[in-house]
Amino acid sequence: MESVSGVVEKVVGELEFLRLPFKYDLVNLSALARFIHSDVEKQVGKPVSIDAIAMAIRRSYRSFSKKREDSFAAFAARSKLILRAGFFVVHLRPVPKLYELLLDLEKSVNWAVGEKMYLMLRSDEITVAGSHKFLGEVLKLVEKGDVLEKREDVTTLTIFFDSGALEVPGLFNFFTEQLAASGVPILGGFSTYHILSFFLQDDDTVRAYNALNKAIRRIQQRGLGGGSA
Image (cartoon, rainbow, N blue to C red):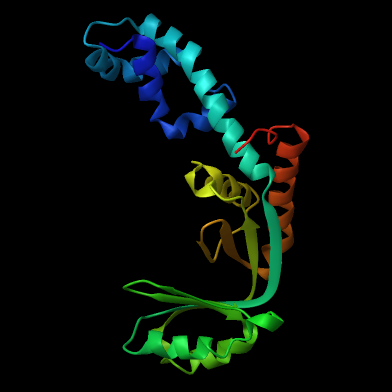
């Protein structure tokens, strides 16, 4: 039979949406205890009072949340930002042979001198982002009706993380929250092992960069990123 504290820590630990409310002490422990009451009793195997669950939440989850926050903050504090201007983003219908034609075009990209082109394929659309000089060549490959959306004057905002960042819940959300709070729309994006890129309208770039940079600096200044990842 599991202990009340052990079950409570497990049940509350599965509620990832509570991470930020706990961080800012916005959680009503009694209300949360009532919310998880039936799950706790089922797993403990006997009646458990609301007060006992609330006390268990207070004892165990604060410690659990702090460990999670330390890991999250360590990665956020060591992240690096880079801006690259002169991009376009086009969303296309995946008509026959289009992807092969785009792959052929990509072979002409001179990465060594800073030219870029990224292809993102789904079953119902293809997104192409790249240096502005390739926009005309991309549009020649499709009919006008196959262009779902076209954005010029785009900048990429790229965030570099340490290895292992993909396993830290909420890290990507931390950055998108800063952009949303600053009123910056994200035109698209993609992530790889430890790199996350957003496509932004040029007019929003300075505001976006400042928002993320300030968020990173706040973590660094408070010493929250000093723990090991």
